[in-house]
Amino acid sequence: MEKRIAVLPGDGVGKEVTRGAVSILEAAGELFGHKFHFSYGAIGGEAIDDHGTPLPEHTLNLCKTSDAVLLGAVGGPKWDRLPGHIRPEKGLLKIRKELGLYANVRPVQYYSSISGVSPLRKDVVEGVDMVVVRELTGGLYFGKPSERTFQKGEAAAVDTLFYQKKEIERVIRYAFELASTRKGKVTSVDKANVLESSRMWRETAEEVAKEYPGVQLEHMLVDNAAMQLIKNPRQFDVLVTENMFGDILSDEASVLTGSLGMLPSASVSEEGPYLYEPIHGSAPDIAGMDAANPIAMILSAAMMLRMSFGLYAEAEAIENAVKQVLDAGSRTRDIALFGSGTVSTSAMIEEIKAALLDNEAIYNIMGAYA
Ligand code: NAD
Image 1 (cartoon, rainbow, N blue to C red):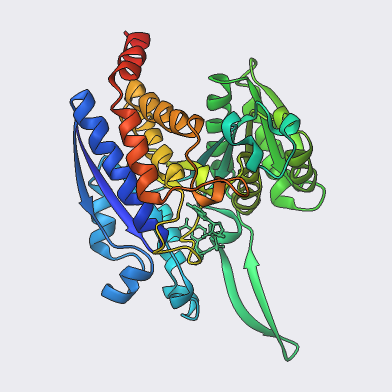
Image 2 (tube, rainbow, N blue to C red; image 1 turned 60 degrees about the vertical axis):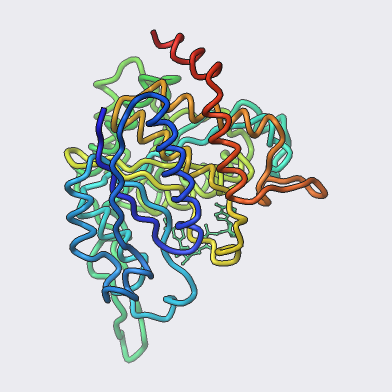
């Protein structure tokens, strides 16, 4: 198989972890006989410095003509004081809109070997296996007006939470499709006791549910969902919610696994290429220190192989290599227990690559798919 992959490393640790994902993909390609062509584009703060905009036209064109997009992370203190329309994060919002990436899919999985890093007790997090599906191109982050204003002579500001019904239906249908391949339960999270947009969200979820008799639908208010995620996370299978609620709840869900550095994501569209990125940001506090955890990015690359290219065995080989390295006790700083040794980003990447190249494990997996 030959595939073209657009690589947008971005800023801070984005660059460090993206290097890791590319080298793991190259190794997987060699092992399984695929050719991945990587083309690089600028996004975020680096793109502002070099091109005066957080998402240059040529980066966008590169993404649109690729089979999938790998993105590191954007942002950093250097660009924090820029006006809203040329901040690095604008590049992210624009690429989501331009590629029609309507749902962000964030699996949250428990790894027994690092359960000690989670701030929650082992008996609470043990066995967690859920997916947060976040609506990505509507809601407060895109609604207009979104501006500073004056009212009665006082400074004021407004943001708008706007959804078209078809946008809600699309993401909810995605969640139902996903749940029907998993444990068969969708938790739709809203604030229907207060917000009109949430009442439409809830009605739409009820309508879509009628098409999926094998999938159970439950509604949960967002404040309760924030509590239930910590209290009893095992109750969730697929959690679907609007843009801002999803942004917040999926970061909260990351603590179940112990670190932001462990959580991958995929953003899906109706027609164009999908985009894969870790859920963490550019981590300016550790950027350039070779200390970031590359696993979220490497697992995002595995999601790409499975979801965009249908390469199931290859994806599983990478996921197994990650698990093997964690089981053997290797830890970057964010997932190390107090007093235990740590490895650098580069060392973690090399260990995962070595585990991936462990032929016996590969043949076992290939056998399972034969
Ligand atoms: P962050 O995710 O960058 O960092 C939060 C904390 O998690 C930090 O302590 C950081 O060191 C740690 N962390 C994050 N990724 C890690 C990794 N791979 N390994 C180990 N530790 C890791 O969030 P923030 O500090 O709120 O934001 C920093 C910048 O990133 C801001 O400019 C923000 O706008 C941007 N950001 C970008 C994205 C994105 O590109 N998708 C997402 C979130 C934040």
